[in-house]
Length: 284
Image (cartoon, rainbow, N blue to C red; front, top):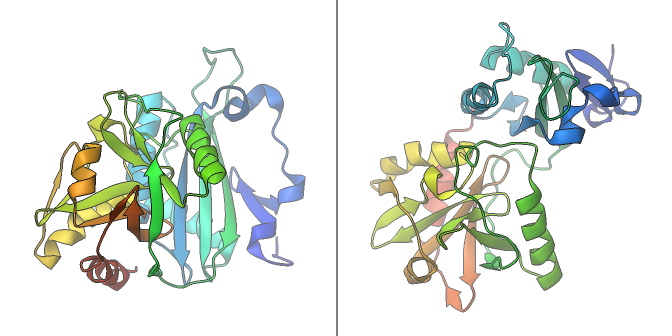
């Protein structure tokens, strides 16, 4: 099939390229809708090249194994690169959403562990991770707390805590919100992991504190030491956050974003441009 317009008018459903308007999934096999029984990845494409794709595939595979969803033999980072290339014609800048959900009938207990996949895309304006020089104004989310269990680190289709946090930030006019876990420790933001520069160390909450295993988070843990930084996972309290020198949010689509203000605390941005430059140097 030839793309008649732009790729965002099309999707890939189980390797079939079709207009989004023609996508139809039988309700009895749509466990994504009925139970949130699946996972998703958001992947940035820059100049036709999917970024950090091997890390996305690692996370998706780990999540499928945890959910006991059967992994097709042909699936690999190379397979996803080919499928994304089919959708985008290996060109342009895109936000890709890959959803994988169990293909089965049944109620809570499925009668099969086979899966479907759906690839969608949205155009992005930039061919690199852009700085936010004005900084973000964020606050602590009060409406919901994150649970700390084995499922927390996986990027599942059940995102209700982040929906509620998003509604709270929207209502209050914040740029983002920090979510606490049930023990009162800082876990992550609405759609991002967090990094805090404190006493010369770059810290991020461990996965056991309820945050998602972010792909950009993993990337920063690998590249930040090249700037001479001590980087480690550590539980963080609100008080520690407010004592930090710099605060960033990270995700695979935006890269890293500088937080200027949390409540009444204002943060600097000496490290931020250096770290962003290091990330942009590694565009694949």
